Image 1 (tube, rainbow, N blue to C red):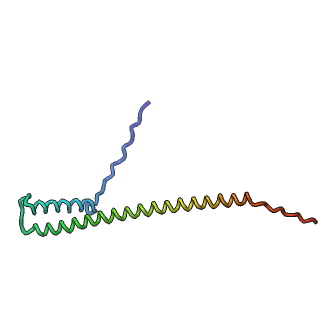
Image 2 (image 1 turned 180 degrees about the horizontal axis):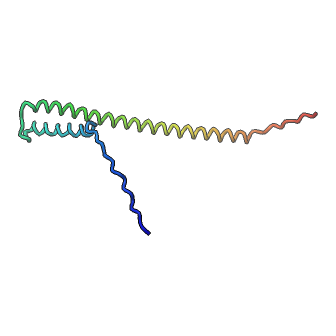
Image 3 (image 1 turned 120 degrees about the vertical axis):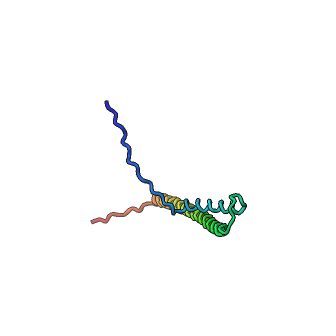
Length: 120
């Protein structure tokens, strides 16, 4: 019996957005480290470009940190809200189940009236 080879799926081209947050954050972090290196004379380059790089990297790092903190805070709030809604739904369902069982018990306990038949 001949074996069939598993068919390979065609490779998709992966598109990467270089203007999204992660690559730009990495670029800004690298710029910040480079400007720190320039400031402490590790790189050996000191000139009129350094203040521009320094302020640009400080602005970029402030933006990156603000972005990370606000997204983390928003994620935390969404998760907490979802958990709260789930808990409220569980409580609502439990309360409805208790109400149904109490109503069923009342129906069983209540004496039933007997109706008299009318005589023709």
